[in-house]
Image (cartoon, rainbow, N blue to C red; front, side, top):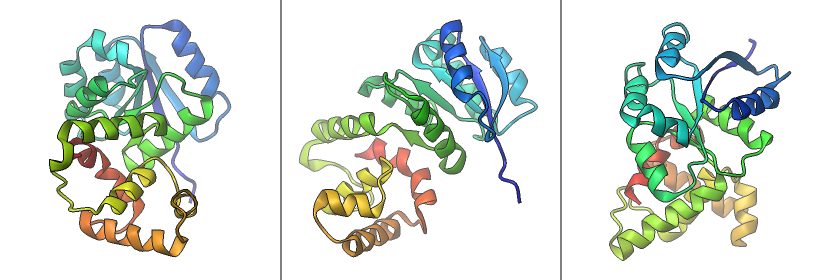
Length: 216
């Protein structure tokens, strides 16, 4: 069976940024660029036809269009269209975007490779956060909540540490090397994490990642 292509809508008012994205995805068979738009009503026009498309935009564009308008687009399309936001790498902006339903975040120094990884993760897991901003975001949440952090999943300190690495895209071998423990030990912790979140695999865990971040 042929893998379904990623349907992409680029939404921004910067022609330079749009052209940069177009060049990055040029000649990539797995991506189908179905539209380039400047306004939210144009996004809706495409989503009426392609409801499972991914919307790629910048944080600045979202602010100009109004977060309430973006939230309405996401919620009115059955949650099947999710936006990835570029240049959203500070705690307040990420937290506000999570609250309106956006589940993909790039930093200021996004590369072509990272753009493609984010699109694949959004398609497969409905979630993406660049590793360089994930760590900072989690640490700020910890500092705000202190030792009385309301961790709903009752993770141990080691499990939280491993979960953050998993969400940053690290595999068990990478994590084991980083923590100087065996891969078998990491796999055991990951099994416990999955049990506590009520999921069976990493794909399902990714879907709950945004919820985890909001309660750290």
